[in-house]
Length: 343
Image (cartoon, rainbow, N blue to C red):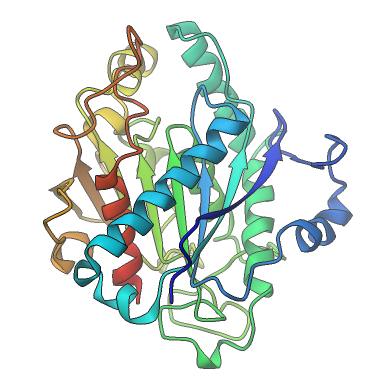
């Protein structure tokens, strides 16, 4: 049975990527992180799926919350209107619980402002230096893992309580998620999400079932230059990513097109899709609601989804173009399909 309304919780990061206490707006001490998560983010027993959403550029706290809520509301509408398109969800129920990770992303809507937030996002997520976002998100995902019950009763692709984990990012928020997943590949880290490519083990029983990246603000070669260890592999312990990395792109996205080209001498993923990657790439298009994605279109390590026919709108006179035009029923259709194939 599915719940009719989206349930969305929020956490906030400062400019260094450290977690802020919601009641005081002060940084949460490292030794209190787990207790804070337990007080604020106890995963509900009714949840079938957990969605962690990280917003992108020029997004206020309230807008970040509304965006995630709107996507999940659209997903509920899609499922209610055509349950036969998502047979596993229709059979088992779909009751997502969402955690929105918010960070200071506002700047003037200019190329200079875009570069400022690009540099801030890089600094916040960097594993070296003073960036903490990957560490905090890794700790959050690790906490969500340990709050599950015995994994013995869960389906093969499920996490500990039969609940599935889906990571969803937009723009620069995609980079934070990729950094967190790659951070978790380090076997020396404690209290973070982990996965062994050889299969489930007592210490690493949890996987990320899908990663959906809307209009990612990063170089096309980012999965070679920035996130080379995001997949499970023989050379390292492997990131906890079981499902595909799915990235949308649109030629109408000027923020990751024209601006990104000027800033980094190549267009971004959100404009032209993922380029060179450590595994074969498959490209498909963002489908309308009356078309089902075949498993063969999404069952790949990396999937580019051409949304150029759908993501076409921008705010009036906005130089970012269709960069934020992802809150669409078609996007919810893709999100639901990934959840369906995770079963």
